[in-house]
Every structure is written in structure tokens, then in C-alpha cells.
Image (cartoon, rainbow, N blue to C red; front, top):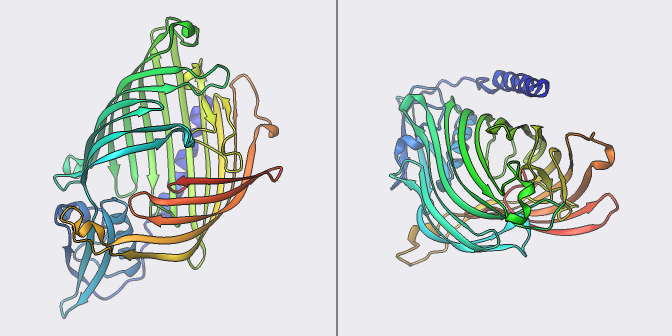
Length: 434
């Protein structure tokens, strides 16, 4: 319990520091905003956009504040492009926000490489409605075959209760997952369950949520000894509490701001299953020279109680160290750190394909493309509760890469990394690293 209280003390310390610095007022201006006009949102409701804006009618015109508003609208991930212009009149300033909506409703193919390994492909299809009723509600269903087959349905609403600013996520699923443990040959774990998350948003950047979940996890009868119950099937009801502070400028490729996330999750069933996981993830992004930025990350996942083999932490699957991208380590606790210098080479510009298709139409316009360079360093280690973390447990790597800003997947990364012995590897991956 001492470790848990220490984690939440760090939460309070970082949060109060960031909260105190977040709302510094910009230099005053004599012009007053008299109206805010939204253009281009054929499906998205106006209030979905304006509720992300700190700038309100009656406020003074502040260019930096409006630019931060523009980026928060982009973080909704509903639009391929957002531009803000203003018109001056005798009575004040009119803000005009131009948006280009993404394609919201579509069946889509699924081709996914599990564990960041292109040899472990899953394939299938899904149906997604990303902006149901124009309110940024997401709902959909999916299935896939191949590696780790499964199916599920989900519903996510980022804003309910009006001024209460509540949100929820619901998901039902049925998967088969290959065991990631290095102590046994790979075997299928059958996961069937649900999760329900209810949260509250405070202001623009702060989130507090609780999640209820249940998993019925089964393994082959010959491996019944790996379950905590000893009968090849474990029932895993859980409750979790999470806190998040996120004022990153752009979620898809952050260059400024903080991200702070902490959680505690309790899993208990009868007298046989009783364990706790908790952790912290802290990221800081800052501009160091013009458009060159530095990102820093430190995170840890810790545990208490008897952790089942299927509940362990790993390096080499979802969490990796570039330079040891395909090296695997197993434990019950994990510590990670990263630093990355991000240098724009070709600023993001927007491409119009001029499609005459009735299907794609305007969705083939305002497609972003740009190129950045990343210079990075990663390190990480895992260890068991009954052991101690040693210097030799850490894997470290460094390298350089090109980051392509492209539509819908945001970032395509081509990277060249080296380990401690200067062994090199080439990495093809998607999304920003952190």
C-alpha cells in the first residue's frame, strides 16, 4: 500500500504544478469577439466544436488562445483540416472556423499486425459510425480471423449530462489471444467479457473515470495449472479508477504540453484471485527552437498480490524498445523511458485529389501530407515482485527516422535503430511513438 500512496502523491504534485501554469492569461487586446461562425460542418453539430474552445463570445481577441482552440478541435479527430479566420468590424471581431469533415460512416477491412509483428496478421471487417447524430458518438462492430481471432461491439459517447460533462464507453467482446508468456509454448487464451467506463471531464484537460469489467478466461485443460483457480477457467471481475491530465497541442503528433495518466485496478474473485495493478505515465513536450520540439516520457506499471501468468507485463509486444524491437522480456513490473527530438522537414500541407466519385466526393479533398524527422532514445526493463531491478535488466536503443503525416492513420514511421552493441534494425510502424 505504501507504493500506492506514493504514486498518488506524485499524481497530486504533478497535477498541481501543471494546473497552476495552464491558465496563464495572454496579453490583453482591445478587440472583443462578437460572434463565432462555423463553416463546413454538414453533419457535426456546432456545439461539438464550440465546447472545445476556451474562446467565447465577449472575450478579447487573443491569437495564441485561438490557435490552441484550433488544435483542440483537431484533436476531436472528426476533421481532416481546420482553419480559423477573423473579420474586423466597428463593433468587434467575428471568428470564422472552417472545417473539412472526415468520412464518418463506412464498412472497413481489418488487416492488423499483432504484437507489432507483420508475420502475425489478423484480417476481417468492421462497421464504424464515428460521428453518430453529429455528436462525436462512436459505435460499431467488428470481427477478424487469422492470428488472435475475435469479435466485438462497442459504443462511446464523449459528452452526456450537459454541464455535468460525463462520458462513457461500453464494449462486449470475445477473443482468442496467444499467450505472451516466455515460460511456456504459445497457447490460446479465450477471453470473453465486457467493460463499462463512466467518467467526468473537469474543464478542458482533466478526466476522472471508473471502470467495471469482467473477463471469463479459459485455457486448454492440459494447462489448467496456469490459472489461479486451477480448473482451466478464471473469472476476473475488476474495478479500476483512473485520472488523466492532457493538454497536448495535437494528440496525433504532440509538440507542446503535458500528458499525465495514472490508474489503479483491482481484480478479485473469491479467495483465490486477488491482485492489484497500478501505474503512472508522464509525458512532457516542449519547443526547443522554432518548430523543433523535444518529447520526454517516463512510465511504470507495478503490481501487488499473486499475478497470474496471463496478467504479467512484457517488453516486445505492445511496449517496446527501439533497437530491441523484437526482443521479449517478461515480468510483473515494468519501467519505461523515452526521449525524441522532432524536426519538421516538409510542413503539413493539404492535397485535393479532385475526385468525381459520388462515393468519395469532398472526402478526397483536404488530405494532409507532411514529413518530419525523429531522433530518439528508448530504455525499458521488466522484473518480478520477488526480485530487484538491476542495471543489467534494462534494454536501450537509439536511432533516427522519417515520420510521414498521412490521412486517417496520422503517422507512418520508417526508423533505423541501434542497440547498445550497435546492432542495427529497420522499423516500419504507424502512429506516433508517444
